Amino acid sequence: MKYLIIVLTVAAVSSIAIGFIFETEYSQKFIGFGTMGLFVLVFPLFAYYRWKDKDFRDYMLTKENLDKMRDKEKHNF
Image (cartoon, rainbow, N blue to C red; front, side, top):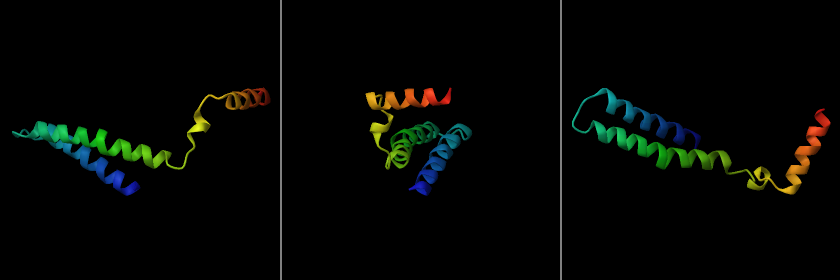
């Protein structure tokens, strides 16, 4: 998964760069497909890869998490 994300990122950025560097009749399509590839393919795959083993409740501001933060703050001072 990690290498797929890297390859897709390089392909999308290369497509955008080719669209800006070479002036052809379809250079705007290169830029558009590169941008669309980043936001439709690369970012969701990256987000899934980074968050797949995480529990989202650890990042919510619940009463228990607020109490943990307050206790940690008291111990630091």
